Amino acid sequence: MEMQNQAFLMKLGHQLITDTDRLWVRIFKAKYIWDGILPQSIRKARSSRLWQGLTEICEVIYASVCWNICDGTTMDFWFDTRLAQEGPIFKYYQGGGMPTPISVSSMVIDSG
Image (cartoon, rainbow, N blue to C red; front, side):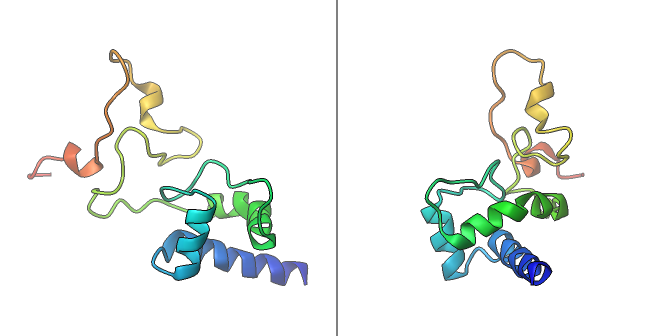
């Protein structure tokens, strides 16, 4: 039963990330204040049993997710993490001050 429960939670975790138009996903993201694609931590005090179950398998979900830049309009060049072990690019920025958020598509010229 434990493996079946984990498989069910993985399916719900996948839907939580990919099916953003579903009513239950919108409610959960609003209730637990989840902006963006993947939060750094989903552990919240006084959460529902379903949310608690998702927190138990969140490491597996994070390890299974990969980026698909598509047209690059929704991914931030500086602040979105594309390689988990490296973190966001802004950590390696050596210019003055903090870089301004900018989409990946804004960093590519028309000729590619």
